Image (cartoon, rainbow, N blue to C red; front, side, top):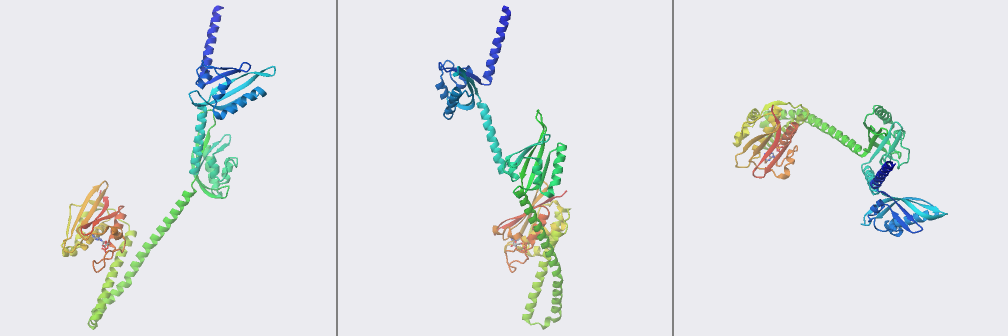
Length: 500
Ligand code: ADP
């Protein structure tokens, strides 16, 4: 018997410890107020929550003062109602602990009556600050999400397919042109707004994805409840539930109308640019090609005139004649340059292995006259092989070297140097001269067709050479640029593909 009692005592002690530990862990205490003797009892956890030493005496006034100023009336009223009307309370309130820490608590209480008179109040008191903080954080992140959705014209949705329950965020309602909760969220409600031309494929796509538990992303048009046309991107992901909860689809819907319109406009202007470019090229080709014929007529009759009737001309007429011949020769050159340029656009470029040493031999032979006349020195080390179109390479180097000689300084022997260096799969070239140089203001202009910086009397030319060089370099996937100092010389830099 004695042993049994001892065992039971031990059991009770254990139970008591367990109870105290639990209360401690969940920060839950109890209290009691003897109304008749005005004596207040707090359990250890209540003391702990208030950060008050358990040896300290407490009374109702003191206890109420622990509540935050904004909550003192509320708790006093609750006590009065309990005492007078027998109404229990269960409130979430804020206290300020003895060390000044604000804390959310849950206060529960009720009155006990004897002979119709309240004699005792008792209740529970729990620290719920962590819960409140979480709740607050959740609210904050929800409002941040809402704001983000607003800014990005986004909405999110959830669809518990089995129970056909839908949840739409405020953003989703807004994207569809609704106020929050204006309609009951459903697949049908969303489908109803889809543009008639898109509706059947959208529905089909979503239903198929759902059957296969697949993710999907679709772009379609809607007419919002306010009659506005919008383009949406809708993305749905199947979320397999790992808990007892049902699986669902989670989706994001985004209003991309503005991007879409921008893209559409861009495509349209690109298309019209392409069209006008093509028309311009065709025009340049046809014009220059067809102009050749009458010009040929003019020059041959001029030659006949000169041969057969030259003796009939006086000096003035001879001068006119010379001017006409000059003008037509110049026109012939212009037409040829124009044809060359438009052919660069239309003809296919070859991708041959081109030995630039050979190219330079051809160029030097073509420029033999001006090289000899000017005494120009052209220097370069062994040149590499590049991948490109040989005739275009000849034209490129010939135009650059030709210009370097043409735009020489008076009294200075023209020196042209070709340097190169391999950069990965490309070879960088620099064609430099010691000529008159170019003002930086004109660095862009000189590559434009028919743009010249000098009169024909100073330097002859048509203003097409560098435009051709630019086209050739660009048709080989690179860019050309100039570096120059007036009175010192110029360098033209560009890259070509390394040979294999
Ligand atoms: P063109 O040589 O028929 O005038 P280009 O298109 O070859 O036409 O050159 C355009 C203009 O750029 C030239 O008129 C000239 O003013 C300038 N330019 C070209 N190359 C050089 C150079 N090496 N040195 C100085 N100026 C140059």
